[in-house]
Length: 266
Image (cartoon, rainbow, N blue to C red; front, top):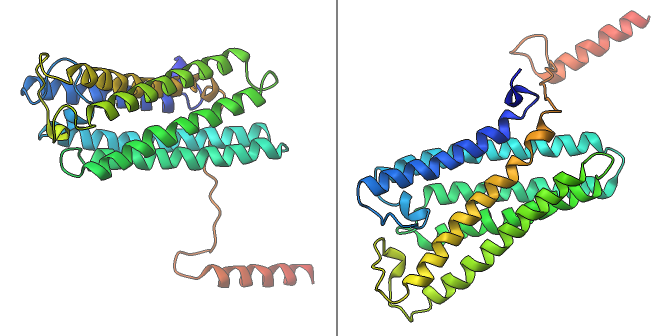
């Protein structure tokens, strides 16, 4: 059995590989068609103009569902490992809520392009990266609370390192974006897809785009730390019939079942 076939480890692997492919394929398409500059454009800029916009949208929508599934499995795993620890269970529920909010933000990014509906796109980015970073913080705290009995110290330190990487990328992108869009370097820079290195504001633009790519891959790196954990878990569906047929109501089935139990006891 290959390592990615053990347990549910294929889920975080699929999430990371598919999401990275969505960035790379959109970037290559945009570069080949000369829609953006080759040197580190914004990720969103590579999904602004058709046909890469269509590719970007559909691939990120799939990433959204993979992310939700991965976060749910993580939630069920922590719940199963710590069923009698209220603090961990509360943090675990908070983490799932934050994680799904982050996934919803990713869906917004995929379907509302920056150059068309800028403020909605920014809202999606704040949910994805802002709330997503808090999700990473919660999972890192859970890893700390569960060590060394349930988590190794190496996993905790790895997640902490990725969390710090993510936070530094957010800070760098925020500061450079505020400087870039402050109005000192012109108006309507949101619509600008091509930059000349001699232009004013080019340095702030490059810092901002590099920070965005760094932030995206820090998120993907965080989910890579789930692989070892997911190798030790599997989920299964349990079918519970609410009726003997598919056309009668569940209530009538329960009443009939109760009557049979009473008759049997008599």
